[in-house]
Image 1: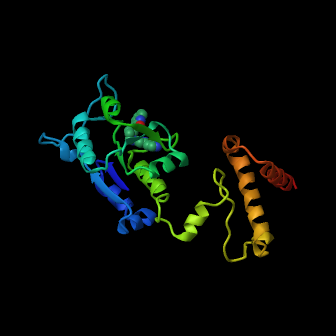
Image 2 (image 1 turned 180 degrees about the vertical axis):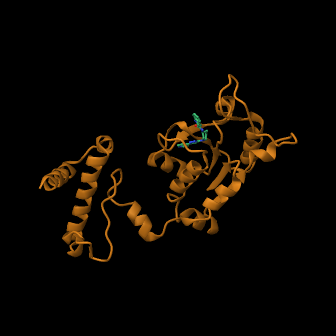
Image 3 (image 1 turned 120 degrees about the vertical axis):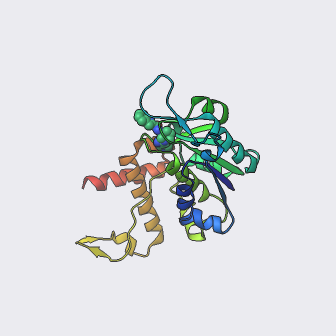
Length: 246
Ligand code: 9WO
């Protein structure tokens, strides 16, 4: 899959992309990444990419022309059918279903804004999808763009190892994860739940699902609502809630 990122801070994007799963996927040539700087698409001596907002007020707005030049360069080298995605707090919330949809595409062009935003006419004419990671403001779209790339790359075929893939394909899709423990067995009188030391794999799987259901219900009831529970899951959740009252 090919990713293209439009950013005024290309080195920031390139550096983040060297690490972890995305870095490994690039080195294995499962993923390619190009970065286009709108500043390279200016024609004035000052290489101006921003200007004052019509209507007045504080801050600056990214100009249409340099962005259009950068997008044209990205479209040129991106596969046909690579949508342009703009990361901003005004977007629809990005989620795992969107990551799965993107992982089916040949490419993605991600636009990372700076300042107080970009000229609305650019969004209207060039952006296919505006996405947000949640209700907070960053100082630019780069970190959000890299989060989207990370979430998509780990879904691509052959990117994860067998263990990581198996963990992803587990039965807890749509739920929060269960708690994890590793050595030592005791830390400041806090012990590992006995069941995890029992060697009874069926019982361990049941405990993990129960914990996942319990945490999801307590922390993210909206996810439980969306998912709907099977009779067996309902039973496990009731058991969790009873144990929690003791
Ligand atoms: C800046 C600002 C300053 C004063 C009042 C309102 C303001 N809004 C913004 C703003 O939204 N700036 C953005 C910075 C312009 C687009 C790129 N930036 C950005 C993207 N900040 N936060 C994101 C983002 C992207 C995805 N998910 C969460 C946040």
